[in-house]
Amino acid sequence: MTGKKVMKTINYSLFYGDFKALNSITMDIPVNRITAIIGPSGCGKSSLIRSFNRMNDLIGNMRTDGSILIDGKDVYSQDVVELRRKVGMVFQRPNPFPKSIFDNAAYGPRIHGIRDKSELAAIVEHSIRDAALWDEVKDDLGKSAFTLSGGQQQRLCIARALAVEPEVILMDEPASALDPVATLKIEELMEKLKSKYTIVVVTHNMQQAARVSDFTAFLLTDLERSGNLIEFGPTREMFTNPVDSRTEDYISGRFG
Amino acid sequence: MIIRKLKQNFAFTAMWLSCGFTVLILLIVVGYVIIKGFAHINMDFFLTPPRGGLSGEGGISSTIIATVYLVITTLVFATPLGVGAGIFLVEYADNFRSRFVQKLVVIARFGVETLAGVPSIIFGLFGYALFVTTLHFGFSILSAALAGTCLVIPVIIRTTEEALKAVPDSYREASLAMGAGKWETIWKVVLPSAITGISTGIVLSAGRIVSETAIFYVTLGGSYRTPTSLMSSGRTMALHVYYLAMETRAFDKALATGAVLIVLIIILNLVINTVSRWLST
Image (cartoon, rainbow over all chains, first blue to last red; front, side, top):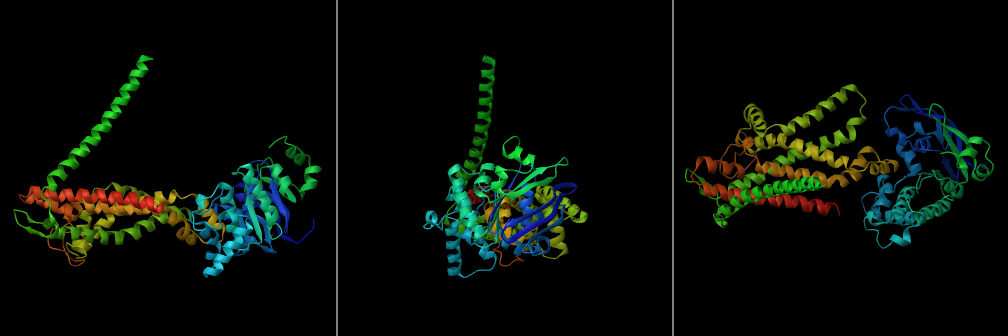
């Protein structure tokens, strides 16, 4: 593994009440790479990715153990607003706001205090361009985001996340609600984005993990149904020559 | 087979008849009032105040003004309170871990349910006891609006709650994940999405104020003069119908006022529909 490590988890455990959802996860997220988190349903993939921007905070009686560091600082000891500016998120289903395309992309900059119209317009154009959506919507920025197709909506959500210039983009099964063509566009986009951003993607689709990611983390539940990190490494090595037999079973489709 | 088919036909006919019957009753009532009433409506009827007395001379101008005045004043009190309470119950109440707050929330929810079913005259009695006498507001727009606020607040809270619950959580998540705070999320994303439902509740409340009588009988007084301030007594159109029917010989004018009321309610309902359609595009 090379490169600066922008994010890492150290013996990170997550509890919902008495239930331990994640058990002592230790892994590095390499900068400007795509890291895929794979594993069967209920293995804690979403819980893990939602820990990076503390979206789990919303769930009552959750607590954590160990730490998650971003740029050397524990995510739980910093301002959540600032954390979420640095760590953007794209969700499973496209969830644009019921606002215009422009207002969707301008949402983040606006809440972070940018008022100047020309500055906003520049940011909106820049981020929609980066999300490979500009040519399709440049004449319709005033139209409702709901007039877009599912794939376009998801790219708009990516643009919305890019608009606050995050360092990391978390993607929670970003293509699972999309058709194959739209999925391919998202994957191409991820490939392009990694030159500027560090990307973490949760996927249940192993072909997708193999296609787009540079590193893969494989999670599996133990007997107590807690998610454990079974194997972490460069995707190519993991898919051709897995170290753990459980990884091999999973990626060869024997379960999951 | 034949029996099943018969049952089917019977059920269909029964449902059809009950539906037809309901519509018929509605048409008869509305038709009767409107046809009888409109015969006595002319420009003067709208432009002159009632003259009082047994014969029920005069028009309804001052009662129209009193109705509008009362509706606006009530909504000024009730909207922020009701919408605020609805927002609290849906967006904030579950965040509090403290037992005490949780108990308060349970009581508040129960209170809203109960208040919604309380007959309006009870709010009238309460308003009479508290606002009219104890607080010395007298029979006035102010007393009536405060009592009316108690009456419509459950309506506004409930429609606000329903409207907020209908906003997908994915909007809230998206906003929070962008680094927005809780209130920012509510103000910029949740409320704009829920505005249709919330405004429906507000217009429904306006309709309720227009059509109630008992509660205002004991809080607004019954003066047929044009109200000039919050402390003026007054007479809404619905109250006027009551006075005309019970205390004068001008039953035709009661019908005419009733016809105007019905048209007003129909207009309010059209407003709800247009506003919803306009806001949801």
